[in-house]
Length: 315
Image 1: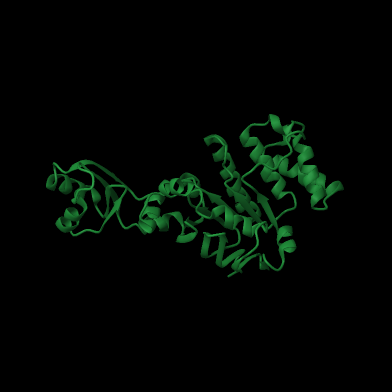
Image 2: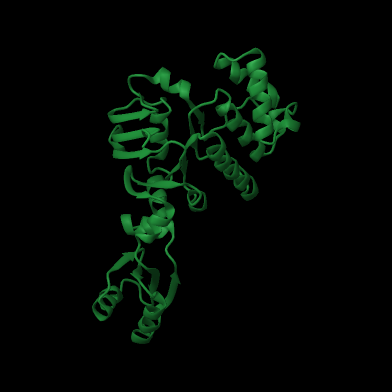
């Protein structure tokens, strides 16, 4: 088995009194699309900045393609491509000029630079946009130019921080189709940070980050399977009632109370819904039933909803 393309081992980071990362550990295999899924403020961008060498390692170790981020940052920068959440293209230059100046930063020139620029413009569907001024492009096209810049020097690992920011659904779909193509045809390892569930579903494997801690790790299918059945959410007719306790005792099931609702995981959940409503007809306001989602995984691991953590952090 080949060595991991990316290794994060016990990485912690603090901003003053706030613990942004707490002993995060995982590996990414070569040719894999790995996603870090979590709410805003969960630690994704901090870890991204450490891996892209723009933040120092305070505690723990991180390496890319066997190169230590702390001791060999210059070598790491040569083998990674980075697309940050904030735009980095020059809006007053053409698409072609943006790539030319990016190439110069990596020492590319002459025929080599022309060949790589032409190839990337073709692969990203930008050939007919080469002479267009960047600021006149749509959000999706600008994102493609960003990715073209990050691939110009043929990196072994591509790091993308919230790559779908500002993109409409169609442009988002095109972006992920290209990332899959890049993985399959060129063997490039991709690590993506995201807060979008549908985007996370497209990754080969995921790490779920909550308040700086890695709470789950696996393929999307494996993570959903870990929930252990259908997910039932019951809204009590009377807030702060003892309905959760009575459901637990009546049906001998494990329950979670989340934002005033009662959450139950159960195989053949539709049968429990029927029995539950029959047992407590005057105590149930509504019942939601469905197959497990990645948010259900997040709730099970953290005890609260995905977006509640983001709201709390903003406050």
